[in-house]
Amino acid sequence: MPAPHGGYRWIPPGPERHVFSNPLMLQGVPPVVKTSAELKLEESLQVANQVSGQPGQAKTGQASTKPHDLKPRLLLMGLRRSGKSSIASVVFHKMPPNETLFLESTTRIQKDSIHSFMDFQVWDFPGQLEYLEPSFDLEDIFGSLGALVWVIDAQDDYLDAVARLNRTILTVQQYYPNINIEVFIHKVDGLSEEFRTDTFQDIVQLISDELSDAGYENAPVHYYLTSIYDYSVFEAFSKVIQKLIPNLSTLENLINTLANNCGFEKTYLFDVLSKIYIASDTRPVDMSCYEMCSDYIDVIVDISELYSWDHPDRKHKGDQNQEAESHVVLHDETMIHLMEMNKYLCLVSVIRNPEAKEKKGLIDMNCRTFQEALNDVFSRSWEQDQEAEPHQDHVEEVQEERPTAQ
Image 1: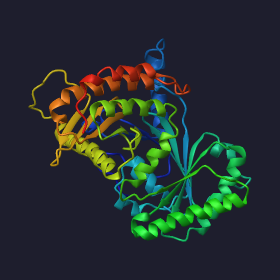
Image 2: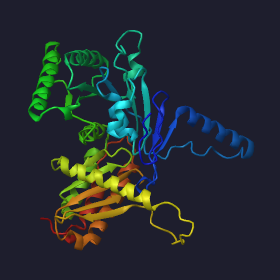
Image 3: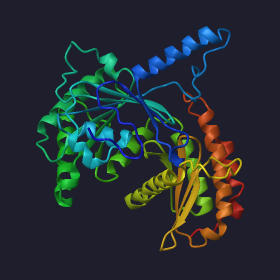
Image 4: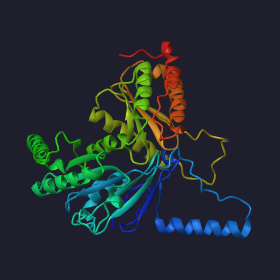
């Protein structure tokens, strides 16, 4: 069975898996992966120890420190061998894409719980499962739905996949009209650019026509060209996750203010665990820029793994700043700037301004101001979609001292 690199614990599909973001991931410490059985055993042992040793104390670790308790669910659906399990393994379990060839076909619903900046579940459905039959309870499947992600193999005959998707949409829309429907037109890495475009247009037209014929006009279906061999699948999942964030507009406003004041060409707020970005400035996404920022996170993690091992003769240097901060200047004077925002998120920016490296102190100060506003936004209740105008004004106070943009 293939195992992801970087010390990541690989649990084969079968039991429900829980992936916990590690606050020290940017220092080279891998995330924690456990099964539900292991978590229940730990909880039982913890309760037993407290009952026997300290009966008067409250249970530690029971109260969540998260700003929310909601767990939206992402359903990965599609026909057999369409690439659903490969997508989940690459994005959420750090598996190298070439090793997904050894994954076996999914025979039961694979449930993964992701514990990061927000808690959500990923359910990988077997392609042969007839979940629309009366024997299945739609509420159990779609009741906590955040998004339905339908994967279509672009290299295979997709007529059956389109027909089954449309049946699913028409059934689910009767009871859950507000769900997000996301279609991943997958495995496009093996197609030429022209054939890729034709396939995309053909699938979109087929789905739209069938839904229109069934009386479902202007269906809220979103389409993405994806492949596990590039960053397109991470980009697609970024768009999917962003629709589940109630404070997205506030985050984008804050990032826009920071980017404009510092002269950033592009800024991403990354989830360190999955390397999907939960927000960015509103400038158009440049895939090469996104890939560069995502790769830089890997560079930081890999270097940290090399130099974070404990040497027996290493002298103690006193208290150290645990928050990661780094920048690199490329051969064309482009600067990539990374700063850890909290234990789940980091801000990565691309700066084309050649004067930026001379004003890095001011950039760091602006980013720290943004960090305070960001964490204040996330400390609010996730059930309240509030605008944080005072924080935006706070960032704007340093506008007069910003580095000159190109």
